[in-house]
Amino acid sequence: MRPIRLPEPPSPTLGVPEIFEGGVYGVVRRAVVIGNGSVSAENQCIGLVRALGLADKHTLYRVTRPRGGINEWLHWLPVSLHIKIYYILRQIRGYTSLLRSGRRKKLMPLPAENGVSAGLSSILDADAKQIASMARETFEKDGPLLVVACGRDTISIASSVKRLASENVFVVQIQHPRSQLNRFDMVITPCHDYYPLTSQAQEQVPRFLRRWITPREHPERHVVLTVGALHQTDSSALRTAAIAWHDEFAPLPKPLVVVNIGGPTRHCRYGVDLAKQLTDALHNILGSCGSVRISFSRRTPNKISSVILKELVDCPKVYIWNGEEPNPHQGHLAWADAFVITADSVSMLSEACSTGKPVYVIGGERCTWKFLDFHNLLRERGLVRPFTGFENMSESWSYPPLNDTADAAKHVRRALEERGWKLRP
Image 1 (cartoon, one colour):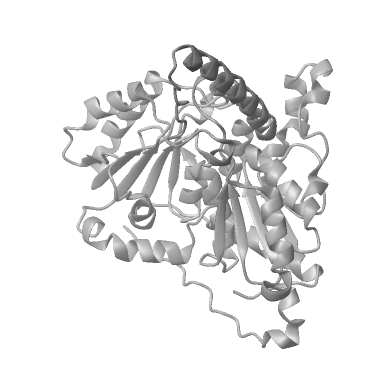
Image 2 (cartoon, rainbow, N blue to C red):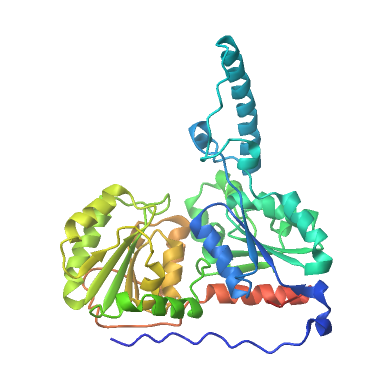
């Protein structure tokens, strides 16, 4: 097998003192990340911030919804409306509890939610007015503020920050916000988010429903299109992981095949049948493998993981991660010679394709709508191949690594320069 060759991280460019670049007013030296509690969404934000050189100079804010009980039925609502309804329900519930406790001459405390008191302040951590006020009040001292958000629940917060402090912030929304893209300075989203505009998609939707399918307009100048999801896996991260996991992975027989298993989604449905298909295929390629390492995600159903554990746990070449820390994911990306990944996860596929190593996909034929468009694009670019079980894993192939995060960072830098601002970590 070919040895691990990671690209050298880019050399820092020599700059000039800030005084010659417009002073502190035009230098972006800090960032705010607005997340929704989703690891994959926040990973995209931090990946972009990292690519811009602000990894150690950002603050994470989080939009959190109420959970439990009736809240599970309200998740389809905008987060601000959800919280208002929840607040009203809490007031009614509290008043009812007070009346009941008065009859019993004993005050019953309201139950906690999310592990803490269920007051409004414990639900919404990211406050648009607070972030905008901070950006305005610290502008003269600390310069402009870069705001990076990702996920449906962050849209209203990020757009409000832009509206309240437009002269002091540059707001980037990752993933398509569906409508009113002019609420943000930049939108970064995968090409497949625009699949509804294609002729194939139009044929799949009844004419009377087409006006309700978003997006309805083609990307504007401030929309940056990527192939996959943004992430933190750059050359520097891979090199660090290769060193950190050397003692565990270096002695393993080669080739090392890493298998990442996600979970079924609305547009990529599968069950135990795919798990059995995967285990049969893995049994077939064991002869050309030195080692196989399998990882499940948080979304993997027990019925799928149970099948794989039952079929492969006793194979001497196979190691299945038990989910305990430390998570070997970055070590897998650095040391794997090839990957086998279930088709449901755009994030896992994007990270694997950034390494330039062989990536095999299982279950791609089960995907529909824009997920199918995503897989078609990966295959057209030669980034992935379907996993059949008849592969010789000792035969390697490569392609230009997918550099979506670095490319998106270039667009942000260019847009900041057009505004008269520059990044100076």
